[in-house]
Image: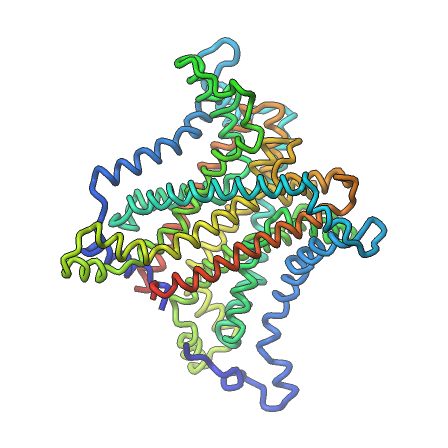
Length: 300
Length: 279
């Protein structure tokens, strides 16, 4: 990309001091300060407090709590929940993207699906909890329907909506829309010439998908799957609104640690839990970056 | 160049990529659409129930839509006000801090582009629940220095919307040739303020609008930070109201989902406006 040498277009800048004063670097200073104060500093504090005890002295005690069975079960549940909902969400979302191939992106159906997906993927949170209480809560629409019309009691083994299995359906409800948003551009980047080339060489539709479509889309699909995982793993609002006491997943454990101060008899446990979450997120997002590089090969 | 998604889409529609058959297409969309409609229908059914008597009526909707709620729901009004203040403050923050930085980097500091992109997309990798652990002490200092006004929360929300706002504005920056536009204006004698106000901002209008709308949607839906810093916004108030009267909370939920869909339809229309003009 062509760029302008700052010295060519800057009105002043002939002498060294003037150049320093009118340097474009000053333009990014306010933003840099803001990001330092509200992104870098809080993240640093969150990770740092895990290594400090109640009196401010350095300790590995909290980090050691990451090996506590209670914390390990939190991470296991979080990771399982994120993996299951990411896989189901990715498959269903990709199916919707497939069904939308060939639809005009300006058309009413596509615009409608885009808007609804955006809302459900980013705006849901607390509201999804209400939606599912109204659907499969004890007096929910589906619960009552199944009980009165078919004699099926979905809560025969106890009410699971407010435990971690109850999070699966609400999470899928925001994972599928997110998949539609992030996977659709990859499908749209498939080049028609490839299909024509395949057809010219005698390939069928099935050949196209097996030999060209799936291999080209695989990195994008796996990348989207990782983003969905990250999305579920860091999600807090839906679970918090469903259960006011639960500590089944890590974000809820952080809430408990923040509000009660002494979870597992330790102060600053929230910091250690935050550290654990960041480690998982860092692994997932690095893998995502790798896959993204691979996927971009075909998107030029 | 990126920034011209319209061109690719149109080619696909013509020939080429095998499209699904009618039955497959409408089968998939129908089944998944139906599954996604169930909770919405359930919410509507729930709000229409007539308590122990059985049957349905619109009494609760009428109460909400005529603002006929008792004083115990005043928290909801305050909270909606707070959320709107926060949305406005966050958008201002984005326009004042992020946008000028993006323009400076695009024009003068191309080497910083990757750094800026990395920083702006970083909040995706840092869960809000992690951020809030570190924000608690930061806000301790802020409320001592600047009081605990609602608007202060916008400083944290500005970080949350960074990835969304950045993407919206950057795709607009990529679609227009900023360098040429600027050189042309400068060589005709325009000063920098004039270049920004009369050349760049009008060309970036759709990106800025889309960025602003998505920021508003994110702020109106935010719960994690507000709830754990004990601030009142739309979402935290809904959780409180839901404990007293779940029906009212569900009605407000349905209404805000509607508003949000409308908001995103507007974003979509703006986005298509950009591609049509630039391609």
